[in-house]
Image (tube, rainbow, N blue to C red; front, top):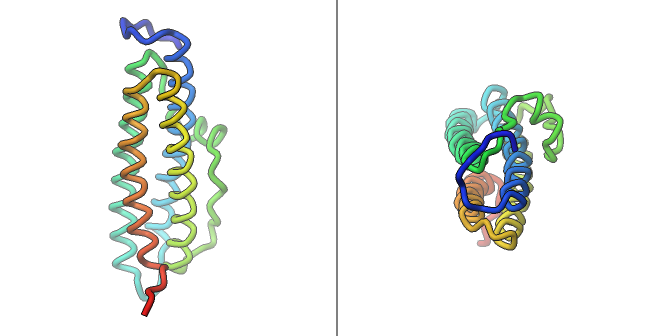
Length: 162
């Protein structure tokens, strides 16, 4: 932590939350880049629907990226929000750059969204156990959004039971 704050959470709690928030910030920056990559490169019969969906998902990722970054700065941390910092920290698998088929993009993005949502669910528990209920709530809010975005993606590739 580099910034003084009158936030009454203990320094150890804030430090742990800031580290966790920065880990997630890296994944959200990476996830946003993956979605934008898919948006720019999607091809195929579902082009316009997916192009527009990916744009909406990107806007959502930007929103919860901002929520996480603002929470960690409110705790006295410094948001490591650059592409370089994200590349060093993200736990997401590298996005295959040669994908152009729309449904392949959907499949890969759904995996990335699911991985981030799983990690964010774990962060809910970790921050709650540490005594930082507000950060736990931020992670809960973000998880709800990730789950909805994942639903939108998976609806394109799920089979229906007839």
